[in-house]
Length: 121
Image 1 (spheres, rainbow, N blue to C red):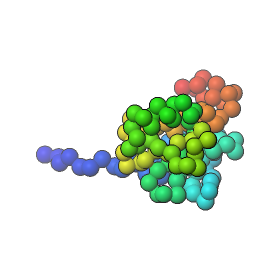
Image 2 (cartoon, rainbow, N blue to C red):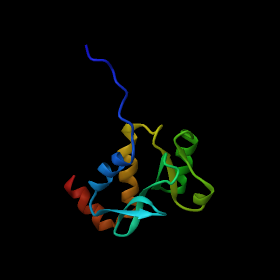
Image 3 (tube, rainbow, N blue to C red):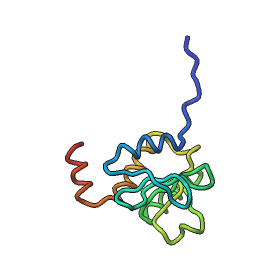
Image 4 (cartoon, rainbow, N blue to C red):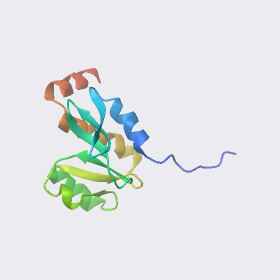
């Protein structure tokens, strides 16, 4: 009989796997940490805390998610006026994770690139 093991933790390698599959996603750096950009625009980066990623999101959606799951979604003072949010890797649900990164890419990518991607899917 197989014993249930602990699920594999989400980490930067998980982010790299998801982000690098998106069209024109380029691995880069931001604030000295690993990041992904699309045509030079940041859509995800590893936060210097070592426990979270930063994604691009509307401020309205950010507020809703932070109210819904404050243990997972939060900001620091630095992001108060910017459309970014931190996502704690240890508490984010795996089912939501890929979607969060893809939606962040969609906010950063040009409309024609998104349309081409949607036409392939």
